Image 1 (cartoon, one colour):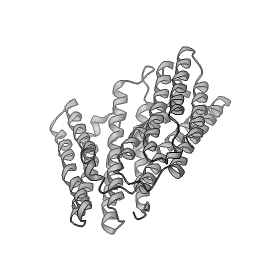
Image 2 (cartoon, one colour):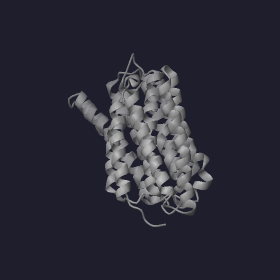
Image 3 (cartoon, rainbow, N blue to C red):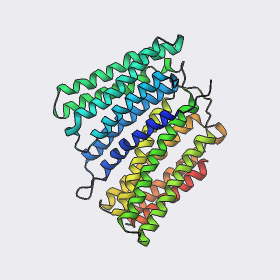
Length: 362
């Protein structure tokens, strides 16, 4: 398979999603009565999933069919306008900006489907079948989501996300045929890794917020230093694997990368929020402890699942090592649950965990 490089326009496309990801993460920072309501956590997911899927849709199209032609560039530039509309509408008070959000999201998805329809006339054999499959069935999700305009209250959101769910399921249904038109693994891994950097940037922002909230006291400097080491350990583990330990020539439908990174991304957002919320101590101890450890566990499992499929056999960690790391997390959580420790101790534990995680998997 010919080498495929990330284009400058793709990098610019990612840049506009930075603000969208930041807005989604900030939903987790709205603290009420020492905890987060289920509604707040649900809003975080309901905002995050369309952002992820909108970005994935265009990234996967570019991976299979994009040629950085004038036509492709024009489509992406118009899509960027809809990204701006969608991002500007993101708010914890979702109802007030529902129409702009729907226009932004549907505009992005519709333009991408039109690209597939045009591609159908330009490709042959399996590539044509793949483009036709997406161009035909992605319309289902778009139409269902548009029907949400005819409803009010919770029914509106049920219909909207029913359409998004159909959209997300379509590639899974057609997986057997999509394997015949495999993704460019190296390019797709690079695209998702670049978006991972955006999410790590949210953790850096949280670290800066810690320093600014306490005016550079020894306590805040120590906490920020440990958070910095934790972020570096995450970066080291993830990118060392992407760069050296995975088979970039492997030909698949790429769905492990696509869907696995949803869990990597929202867990990184949760970790970023945890860093700030731990230090501020505005949440009840048991809640923030549970929230932080669950975030780390989701990230750990998602990363291991994504890389396991593509990792060279001789680089695959032993099963007992992975079980040992999970048990370590459980033991640390149980200890902190029974013995109330300071936020600095919790962060120090997670910092050491990620250092060990990076060591044994790279």
